[in-house]
Length: 227
Length: 246
Image (cartoon, rainbow over all chains, first blue to last red):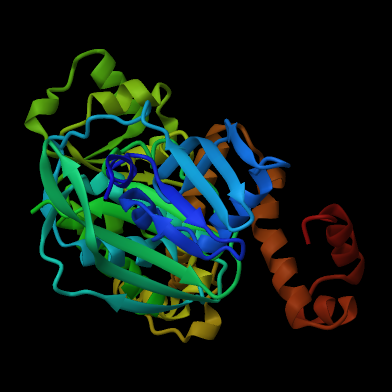
């Protein structure tokens, strides 16, 4: 690898090189991570729609959000019909130092899910298929804020017919808090039908350690596994 | 009633949620119509806690007349009556709370991680049957009378509260003896005479129920006059006199 290739590989910003058909020819570490949340096709379409009319480079300041990551600009390089590069500029100004608050209590996450589900969906006819990773141990969390967030999600799926609820430990992904790495627990609700999810209410989503992301038929709550 | 009745599946689910929340460091809001069992459910979560009206607690806090450090658990009845919600809850941060209210309200939603709605008794048929049986047995024991359910007028407008009142009232009215009526009449008449009422004024107390009962039992005024052994013209006069009350 040349120094330039090394630089791209270790860049904080995702970089991808597509061929004319949208196939990825090359990408860096950050792009590999990003591809967990967004399809290559979507990124290729983004590059094509912002590419300059003739060969060259074009930079645009646009706001993009994929999962927990937000980007404030893109750069599209259109060098030949078979070489289109895309670089996304990561939003870092909003990044806060995460702290573990003092209200964390050790608890069983499945008990909290059961409690939130049974009180929020009381009398509802929704069918929920539960796929739980029961190996998740007791963990420390802010029970109050976790339940407020979870209640809010259950409220949103109340009118769905079928929901698959998966609770699992994410593989290969960590949350760094105070320089310490923590595994991430995901609580994911997937519906066969489209659901209009709305952002969590302020009081429910104010906890830095709880992340909520959604797309057209799923919503996911993530939190670090602090034991 | 000392226990939350959980004969229906929905109440069993509610009771299970209440017991789960009892073991967690969270605040719970219980809401629903009057008489559905909110206080009884609160007792399932915090059996030994101070129970106090929200407005009263707010006044005590403002006047610094309560030592909150001595309370680790409080049941707040009618949370909706609290005026300055943010200030109020800022004093209760380290106390496990169960709030009771008629409805869920955005003003204080964020202070309760769990909200339990108790449906009306009409929606909980099995609970209703069990409650009717409990109240019926209680009342029949007190008034020493046996009655079937068809002779009891049930009032569910205020759920458990009016249900109990209506059962007791039905059983009381049907257990009453002539002596009880005479005694009650005597007490009533004594009071009215002291208020300056005359014989003529008080006659309606006797005549109105008698004529109402006769109207139910006999088909015509002719028959009524005949059976009551009074003149038909007198009966017509009486009916005219009490028109609107019969």
